[in-house]
Each structure stands twice: as structure tokens, then as C-alpha cells.
Image: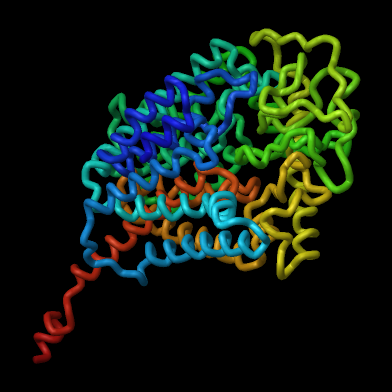
Length: 550
């Protein structure tokens, strides 16, 4: 089924390759196979600027079919995992894993019922609304199955480390070929999809204090690949979240401070050498960091839908339809007299179209729609040896301003629709930044869920993330946790922070699968730890005190 669907939705040579290899991979290694797919495949389509290296495998998320190919692959992996633990033994529905699974299923039901109540068909309600939460459930089942997937457990850390190393090598090739994400920001920032640096954070911080750490070439390569992927990703929300979670990891594992300090020193020195040796990279990183804490003026706010980061194809509307109830954006908001590029978010393909024409993913404007004036000449591409671009900080400030304004405007709309929301198919609301979105889109997971599905949805999401986060901190404190459990725990801590800057959980396919797998891994590890504690605790009849009293 998975192979046939991939062949249909990806009718190309790469589709034949995926169809021949991926179903066999997830049948042989259910958990590791799905993880490798979501690590290696990027969830952004080519847009005239991105090369094959930075968009490899995007067809698995954004193919021609209405269902991403990663969904039948994950379902195949779940069936393969179920075959290994069937019939189920010692299943406890009141465990941490059972609670997480119940919350995820409740989100699926709520999203589907909300769509049906607002006039959607069954397929539309499940596919458009509930599909990310279905992927969350499938990821949970895979993560909870880790204890019985012996082959996956042995190969997990090695294969994920190899995948991250391969991506770093691809980044080096992409930089050399000029296949960067946005030359207005830097000649080095490559990756668009924020899930990749979040995975790199989890892999790197998961190794800190790990009892299996060795000073061999494999461990040292992963210790360097993680920070460099985080650096070249240009995702500010992940940068900030990595710092916050890194402090938590250091506090929780302070008893192992000596090996952690050695690992951090080694990785920091290598990254510093790379940053200082690459011409202009240090200046670009500095401007990127400064812009993360600055805000732009009202004129700098992007109004062309450049904020739908990591969204599904349905959320990137074409210019032919009405963008907001107040009317289309004016040409002045999309072009400045001084150059072809306006301050807009670097996080979407729409903001990276070449000056010679519109982005290949957008349709031509309708006659009734004002056409954006094209600049007469393209801005020359500076050499990498030149200093960082002076307008980079302005672009970052505009991006920050848009995300912050969405929080205030989104909360105002929530207060106006406190008990019902506006429905899953409501058009984009006035004042929100992503005016090109075909339905309501807020740069905050909780606010978006509230507006789409009512107040129960953000409560379920908050409880799910809270339980996963608390269990994750317990696994980080446990010195017996291996690198797989520790990496999953770090992802459970970094993901909620990223969800506060964009609705990745409900707008992508990559994040919910990863979140479910990570939560399932820490959940099964917590259950295993409680089972071992229970077996090691003597019963009342066998305790020495009781025997002596007798």
C-alpha cells in the first residue's frame, strides 16, 4: 500500500527509489525507519531558490496527493511494530504512555468532530484537521514500542548520528554551490525546516553526560555535527529554545558536570574555529542574533503571507483570492523604493522569489488583483568575503515584530470568540500576519487550536506537552537513561518552546511524528523504570523487618 501510494503521489525517478526502499525499511526497522524519513526529508518544496540538497524528500510531505506519503509509511511501521509485541502483555492504560495516548486520541476526535460540525466532509475533517494528530498517535505507538523493538534500539543512535552527519556534509556542499535559503541574510544559512535543528539540539544535548560517551571519532563527529546544523539552520526560535533547554539539561545532570564540560568545550572550540574561519560568517551570526531581539516598525511588517512557516500546501494561498476581509495588500507593502526585497520573514518560499518574476509555487494574479511592481534590476549578490549585509538586522527585526504582533492580535480574537472559536475552516482573521493563509493561522500553537477548535483543544495540547515535559525531566535526571532516551527527553522539552512561535504541531507532518515518537520513548522508559523499582522493592511479607518481628 505504501509503495503504491508513493509511486502515485511522486511520479518520478526519486518516487521509484522511495517506493522501493522506504516501505522495506520501515518493515525491517519500524521506529528507526520512520525517524530516518523525518530526519532526512525536508518539509519545504522547491521554490526557484532552493536546490535538491535542501529540499530532498519533500515529496513525502508535499506530494501531489492530498495525503502526505509519510502517513501510510508511519501506519506501515506501526503495523510492523504491532506484529512484534502481539499479543500485548502487561499493557497498563493508566500508565504515562496510556495517558499521553488518550490525550492524542482526544485531539483526533475533537478536530474531526469540529470539522463535521462546521460542514466539512468526513474525509476533509479527518485529513485537513485531524491528520497531524493522527500522526501524533502513530508516533506515540512507535515510541512506546521501543522496548520490544530490539533491533531498532541497537541501531537508533548510530543511524540518527550518521544521518545528521550526512546532512552537515550536504550543507557544506550546498553552501559551496550557493544553494542557500536567503542571500539577503547570509551566504551560509541553508536549512529552512525548523524540525531539523530541533533534532540536532536533541541529539547534541542528549549526548551530554551520557554514560555511553566515548572519545572516539563517531561520538566526536556527532558532537560537532549537531551544533553546526543548529548554526546553519538560521532558525532563531530553535536557537533560543536550545539555550533554555541546555540550561535545564545542565542543572538536571549537574552530578556529571566533568564529562559534560569536556564535551561542551570540545564542541564549542570546533564551532568557534568554523565561524571565525569562514569569511563573513561571524558577522552574519551576530546580525542574526541582534535581529532576534529587535522589532521593526509598522512599515516593516510583512503582509504577503510570508509567515506561514512549515505549513501545508493548503495554507499557502495563491494571490488570486482575497487575502483578508479588509482586502489585498497594497503594492507599497511588498516593495521598497531602494531595492527588490522588502523586510519579510525568511521562513517561507514566498519571500524568496527571484526578482525576475513570481515564485513558481504561486499562480498568476487575477485581473482584479493589484500586481506587485517588479524591480527593473536585481540586486547583485555580494561575495562571501564581504562583510555581512547591513539590512540583515532590519529583516530579522521585521520578522520578530510579526511574530510578536500575532500573539496580541491572536489573543484579541480568542477573547472575542472565547467559548466557540471561529471554526477550522474560518478564513484568516484581520490583523494576523499570514494574510495569504486560506484559513486562520496564528504564530502560536495554543492560540491557533483555540480559534479553530474551541477552548478544549489548547487544554489537551497543554496537558499533553506538560506530561511529556515532566516525564522528560525525570529521564534526564536518571543516570541510567541512555542516549536515545535522553535525546527524546530533550526533544520533549524543546518542542513546546518552538510551538509557542509557530503552530508546528497542527500545521506540519514532521513535527507531530517526532513529538509522538519522543513522548512515547520517554513514556515507555518511565514505565520501565517504575517496573524495575517495583520488582526491586521487597514485599511486606518478605521484608527483613517483618521477618524479624515474626
